Image 1 (tube, rainbow, N blue to C red):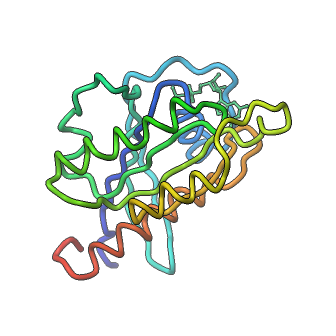
Image 2: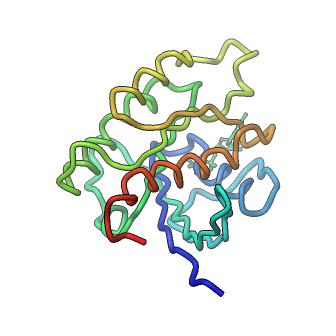
Length: 179
Ligand code: GDP
């Protein structure tokens, strides 16, 4: 058989936006109401996307803020980035830009293979939405990134996040020796 292509994906964003819940829902197919704040965990999953099977490593992080110095482990050797905000938190949305710039700067790139995720969409009924879908779309467009809204709680668009991330990675690896 063929050797699977390895893809390393890191999940970044403010604390408590739902990064761990998203990853846990994806890997273990359940929603944890109260999960311990993550220090850092790595998960492995084989993902088949467009008929190709990838051996993916997903790195869940504690979360970043404007004062966080980017951990080199969250950029070096990473193929794709998942940048998460909560649709119920304007501050977490603003943080996406800051984290994006830190990563791009670290990598010496104008743009990085990235999917921007608006999490916790199930909260929109309760007037708690602070970020409109169009704002998320515009942010993603500005960074040439993919964008999707999800709910780990209601299991909406969870797998989509990682498929979009692989798609973004393929866009940038198709002309390079990254296979
Ligand atoms: P992290 O710090 O970014 O990893 O965030 P967590 O995954 O630990 O989630 C923080 C809090 O938000 C927890 O209380 C979760 O139960 C809650 N949460 C996570 N995802 C969702 C979601 O899709 N909908 C709702 N309503 N709450 C969520």
